[in-house]
Amino acid sequence: MKKSFVYNNNFSSLVVIIIIIGMCSVTARSQLTTDFYYKTCPKLGMIVRKGLFNALKTEMRMAASLIRLHFHDCFVNGCDASLLLDGEDSEKLAGPNLNSARGFEVIDTIKSAVESECSGVVSCADILALAARDSVLLSGGRSWRVLLGRRDGLVANKTGANILLPSPFDSLETIITKFLNPGLNITDVVALSGAHTIGQAKCAFFNNRLFNFSGTGAGDPTLETTMLNDLQSLCPLNEDGNKTTALDRNSTDLFDNHYFTNLLVGKGLLSSDQILFSSAAAVNTTKSLVESYSTNPDLFLEDFVNSMRKMGNISPLTGSAGEIRKNCRVVNSA
Image (tube, rainbow, N blue to C red; front, side, top):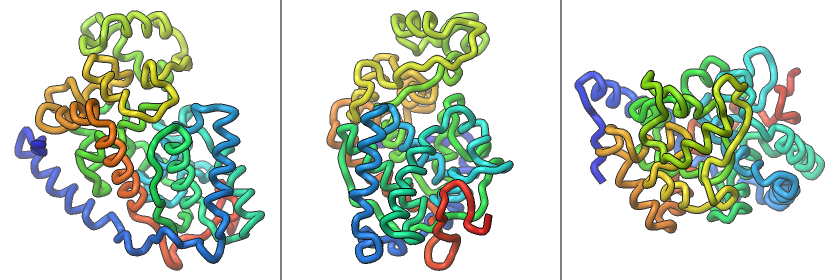
């Protein structure tokens, strides 16, 4: 696949700078290990999976929400559970998370169970990573051995969350840049976007495509007509935008490659989904991967696992850095 997405000298210079920053920001994998809690909390995996199983029995959508929590945590301050902190500077209050990030109570419940078994040993950041893996597995996706040993951060970063997290309204160039920043690449952009094979989104995140797209007075021409009509009925003008619909039509709760087959026929829900295939910028960057994943589910699942492991290694705190929070919502000194 051609990896060139540089359209002018300014963007080229930006890409070089961000690649250098990214190379410096991803901590070596050797600091995390799959058997980190083998002696100190041997039942950890069973405790997390039981907690996830109970949560998904109540609401299957929660799987997508917990994957998103891990994603939104790692992109800000690295994978340090800073997203879970409450307070005035909470990342929960940033635009990309406010009234949309969810699943905090599930993590609280799992953390409480873990603390009962092995107090002060397991970080909230590692629980998030395990919960994301089990959310994929219990939705029909592929499992993997999670690298563990992260410690929890001491500060949240609301400003960083507003700047660093990819938005459903971003251009493809901007999304790629935001992935390059922490050391990820174009394959990671497309593979991790495939997490939208499960879950739902509020009308507020896609109604810009429905009635007056880019000031045209009409819907987004890349949105399939029947789907456009359905969404216009679901999300009429002048409503609050809080109604939800499936990100992956006809395969709502199953972790598969159907998300990518949707993109080929204009059925990506978010603009940030459909531009992976339909935008001009996609031609030399993401389009060929979308096509490959749409016909080769094994390739998608393999790349998704690799990208999740890679994302989980964005600047983790290890050794004596940070702390092991007793309550994921507050630092221990509080």
